[in-house]
Length: 358
Length: 281
Image 1 (cartoon, rainbow over the protein chains, first blue to last red):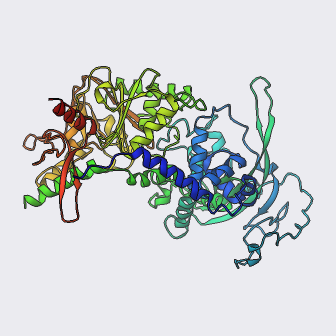
Image 2 (tube, chains in turn purple, yellow):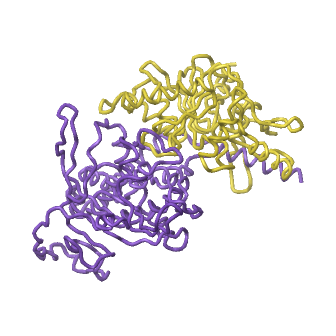
Image 3 (tube, rainbow over the protein chains, first blue to last red):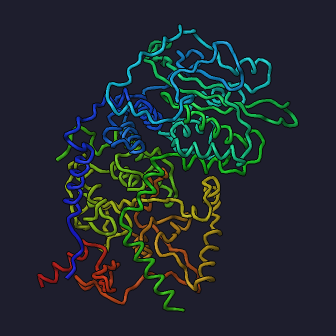
């Protein structure tokens, strides 16, 4: 007689062992070092930190190793670690004009104060497989001489702001003026309609692939926002915190961020003259694709605020913000692997009854 | 044995307190969904994180825990969740529904009637009963506030018009205490009557959707129906092949590739208790 399979526990323990084995791969190949991942898979580390909401390259590298290179899984590991950490306070807002720039480009002005700094980028490479990388130690050309640091470089958009041609970054519906204390989505769940600060926070944690597709859709007629990449910058910046007992800001460390200021047209309204509006993106490390996609989606989500019709998916808050999180999406999609015997039995019984009743 | 690298039941005490506050509010407003700051647990969203957070917040060292999925203690995810709590709390574990102080469940209510003092914790994938009819949360919140549930009645009516009967077999919507429309989680409608006037406390946790709700003991829970189409539960023409029960929810087990099948109790504890009793007799 058939007996329903018992012993889920043994099976699970065995699957742990198999997982450890495939993670290690062929034992005759040297094991990956966490430092190697941190140094040589830096962009993966950056993405995991951004969507994992923790700036810690070491932990992100461990997560990538543990996840066998599955970045969504690595992000999950980092988030679960983060969940029980205490929140000590809010840092001061970053002033990105004080960034130590490694890269800074503008697509709207040919030349500008501070210049165009290409920095390390894939952008102007020919995507030909470099077979020399197959051999270790083959690519050790000394880096080009780094230019002298230019000091603080103001953002490209500020001169436009001076002329009133573009909305101000602070004030109006922008982030800083909206709430003295920003909402924390990890403590208070997202509610609708969501403030711009909450939206940006959601987008910053959001899945890069999802944001990329949503941003892309705005360029293909699903919402018209006529974007220009006003400025993209990447570099290191100090993070400051005001400890209550001191009352003045102290630097608690330095992080690398990528920032995108997107410039978008705005036709104006009865009360307002036409001017440019902004979409904003920020991500940890060197994550330009993410920052740009985020800026496009941020702008699209401002449709209602700017009196535009909100009919495209990228303009719909609930649609975008409820589906951007890779943990939520990956977990719920994959939960379909869990047993559903009972529900399926209930449906089976119904379908049989309906067929019998025909 | 408890793993001392983690706080008791994994969550930090502040998070537990936040969740307990949400639970208290949920108990005070039966059937109402209370938003809470759902944490990212070490298990994936959609795999019971809401139930796990509720259990983690209420469990104490003297509790006795039972974890089931599809009614069974030995399904893979139930095993995994039970191992998680064994590792982080070291509490006593049981498979007997009558011995447990907390039962965490996915998709079933035990066949053995629950008693006062017991807590049933449901894992909930979609807490909003109206979500399939109206995906916008801002809109469904308004409907709950106004007790405007016409949409659901229309849906059930359309089922009858189309199929001659209400074609919802699990996660069958209920009214709690005559006020809030509630998703009972994807339990088969077979289990719905067990929710009403239960002496046990029923807590519902939805981690991904960040909602907690509750049915306090001795609360009226009614499955939606029409006067001329009363609520009905599933029934089978066969009995359990192992214990012979004709009153429990049965799983269909395929036994060969020629259409052979048999039916077994989905509640493994109930089934083995009955078999034990029969052997003893």
